[in-house]
View 1 (cartoon, rainbow, N blue to C red):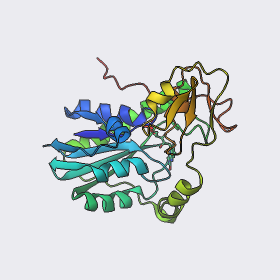
View 2 (view 1 turned 180 degrees about the vertical axis):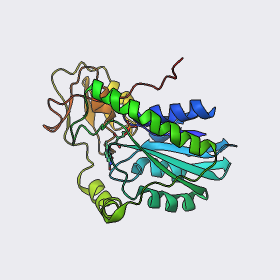
View 3 (view 1 turned 30 degrees about the vertical axis):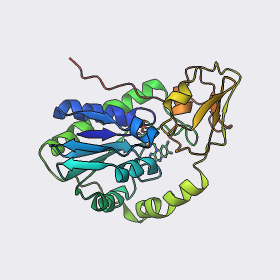
View 4 (view 1 turned 45 degrees about the vertical axis):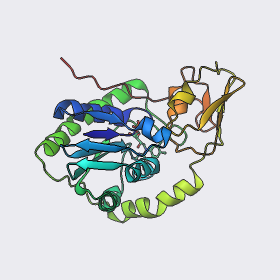
Length: 253
Ligand SMILES: Cc1cc2nc3c(=O)[nH]c(=O)nc-3n(C[C@H](O)[C@H](O)[C@H](O)COP(=O)(O)O)c2cc1C
């Protein structure tokens, strides 16, 4: 079974591709995460966990979801991390996580997809994003073959920089950068509530028809990226930038 977490759709796209190609189910953990549910999952196939990379690890909220859930049936687990460029030493972190989950670690694949972190970086225009997804598709095809063959996935060695990113920068990132306070709705806001519906943390609500953000944000970029009128900004950092969101994966033919 393929279980995924996504903010802006890249990881859903990769999960849908894998599920389609491997003849498995792709399950979005959105409702479970949003509702704080503790569910039990069953699969006779190896587990394939797909998610974005946040500061060179899996998102903390996805790690918490995995630790809170129960996985019955097959004991093997693969991870696929979509990223804008690098996953650092996330594989070592995931190997340790697998031990806590009581699953056999089968390795981590990294997949470069369009950058979505509009609060921090430039994100690609649609045409450029499409090109990146096209390149990703051939990489994903090879990763799928390896998983189908039951092989272990071995990503490149992270080096000192990658280890520092995962083990030192990641905790600092959560401490210093991950906050909702700079989010705001401009006067273009039409009060449609899409930002409320898209938040996996249930951290956005409408007050007098306008969104307000609470304290439990994971910086997934869903609220800002899915706003149909681009009325959500992250302070001045996102102003004038395009928004990125990935369409659903559709098999050709
Ligand atoms: C909070 C945050 C942190 C990120 N950190 C990294 C990172 O450490 N390395 C990287 O290559 N990409 C990073 N990215 C980019 C995303 O991992 C990448 O665009 C991912 O495919 C988005 O997946 P999604 O659309 O499923 O949410 C980050 C994005 C966000 C929002």
